[in-house]
Image (cartoon, rainbow, N blue to C red; front, side, top):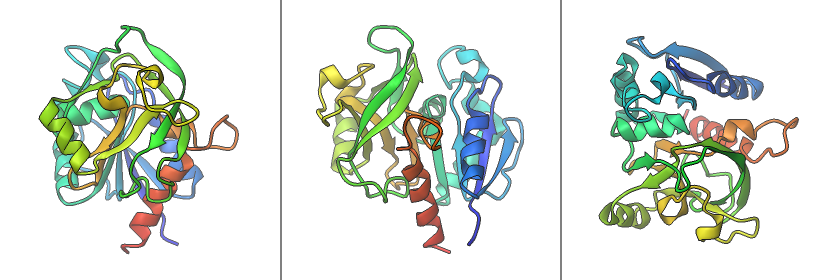
Length: 234
């Protein structure tokens, strides 16, 4: 069986890059780090932009990282249909780079949040969610201060109409409301894909919920979905 090749982009200030490297390899795949100043990727099937504090979050989260040389290659890779996933700071970088619509703002209470969080799987029509069940409730950790997703009304309607919202924050019973929204994100949005469905940005950390030694393994299915999608196209 073909091993899926992951490239994990490392910026100054990345702190989830080793987590993002570890999980694919534990699952029997291959992973390589790619430095932000590199001018080429390393023949990936998937590009992973990890969490952390790229460039110390100066100016805005992801605002400087978008100018790193490797991001031009990531854009070219995505334009050709390659799978890209950005988690937490990676999501912020994807919006700043124009690979995903919208923006990530300060949490509604202006506090850093680090906790387990329930998510509802809102769409299984993507390379990243095809093995989940629609409306399945997941336990995936969050850790951010700027996770409040915002997009204007026209943009939100486009996300809704085109089934681009993959994950919403919910409670343990699947209720999606203000009480189950940890950061104030519009429409309780926790993760979206681009119109072509090959670029995913999400604030929760699936790589922190993908091993049997941790409290939740709900992130494993995201990686299994990616593997299934790629192998079906070989």
